[in-house]
Image (tube, rainbow, N blue to C red; front, side, top):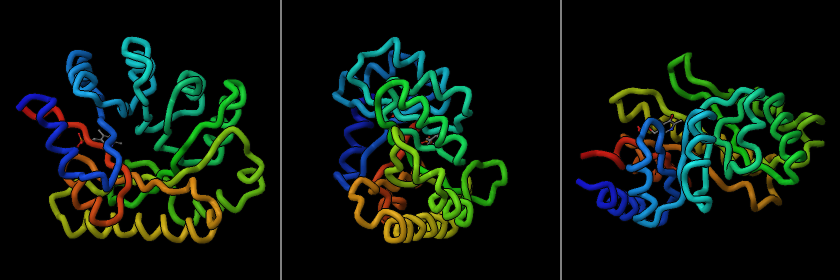
Length: 219
Ligand SMILES: *Cc1c(COP(=O)(O)O)cnc(C)c1O
């Protein structure tokens, strides 16, 4: 199936219940241009270098999301243009993003990434770490950065029950944080979860943003 057809199909399934982040990592420019020509503008990359390269080569009305792990020393490369950083997993990183946001005279939207999968290798905060971060004076004094929600990745498993449980955990974290730390803040509204294999399940569990790569490029 052509890329434009895949896009149309996936958008139809999502049915405006969530924002599709089209994950273009490891895909050639021609394929990304096919999505662009089909009218799509919200793209995600997991590596800073690829994000910067593609930003430079492609039309400037694309909204670029960083979805992969971010090192503090690389924030400066994406700070001028990144539309949303999904992968904030420390106060130090948030402080660096704020500093670079200030240099670029903008407020950079971010999601806090949670670790809910069974793999140790995945990044992210646990519940206690997130509460410490949001409760800290350092966090509360930050300008030029805005936490607009949370992100998480489920375990890489065929066990749909486990994936569903992990999505439920993320959804619960999101609801509690919203109530306890962002009650009067309508900007805190994104729950980024779900990928090619599980985006419909994720939406059932409350996802507002799905990050879909391989399903878009399926032949
Ligand atoms: C690659 C990637 C995705 C998309 O994965 P697919 O299975 O190809 O849809 C989503 N989120 C993150 C963080 C990724 O690195």
